[in-house]
Length: 273
Image (tube, rainbow, N blue to C red; front, side):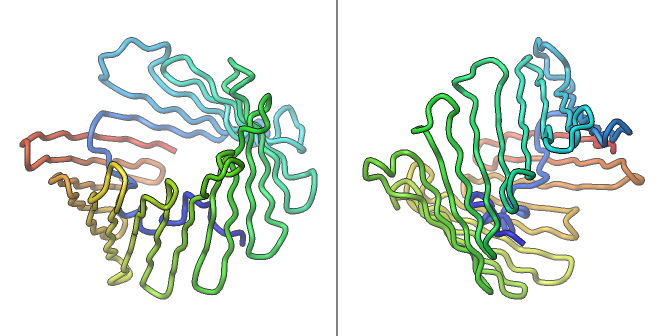
């Protein structure tokens, strides 16, 4: 199994700290798999926004074998409520362990990016991306897995002019998880940790040192992945409840209260698959 991407190094903790907190707005999500080459249509409707939009929903198609072609996959063909498009395609048929990707907004060729992911070496994953019309504008990363840790490095074109890459490492052993990343020329350090107290209860925390968000941190607890409470350094408290009404129909509700200002927000999400 390939290592995680660099941005997913703290994911074990961020799943508790950041995922499934619908604390504002009302959203309806639906996903439907079709018999047309396994194509999947996803829709997201933001309800009661009071905004003028091109479409009341975000429409996303996934076409594993577009027009019966098995050599290329349309991972995403999307139109959002602002009328903007996203197209993401990929193929893993060119060479064993190599995945080639292309992303476009279907409006400006200068924003089109191409990239590749190579995982043909055991425990190693290397990713490179660059602008189609400007190859010198690139990003890259490499992650490597050893028995209890994943190490990673991420860089961009600034590396050619003496810039420093970002570094990250994570450790996972039994119920314990910890990670730390160093970014912005080693000026910003972000630490995450998670402890699985029981098979149903997880505790997580994060803290940032350096940069504009220096001193920011959060503590969260999750029960069964369905009930969550988070307290942040900015004196906000978030809670979330996820309930499966029946197979394929899920309700996610949450609220956020700012202790300092006394402001309250809440949200609701309905998901149908």
